[in-house]
Image (cartoon, rainbow, N blue to C red):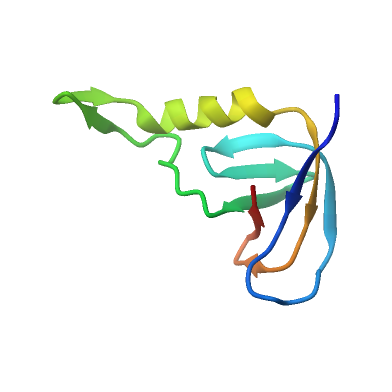
Amino acid sequence: MRPLIFALCLLTTPALADVAGVASVIDGDTLEVHGQRIRLHGIDAPESRQLCRLDGKPWQCGKDATNALTDKIARRPCTAHVRATLPARLVGAS
């Protein structure tokens, strides 16, 4: 299985550190690798417990977003090239 590579790019600061390992999905726009939370730059997904409305009915959009990201990349190796940080998490581009 080939590793997924995330180029972390926010602003033009030099790389702070690389984070590599197996990714776990936190929600539709956040991964965790070795205890480091990585927010995917340019992706805004509902929070995992967020409810939305579809055709006037409640819909678990946050759960669906989390499941979609899980289907794509969860439990697979990845490398993040860190360029910026936010409080309690790193920022990365998909």
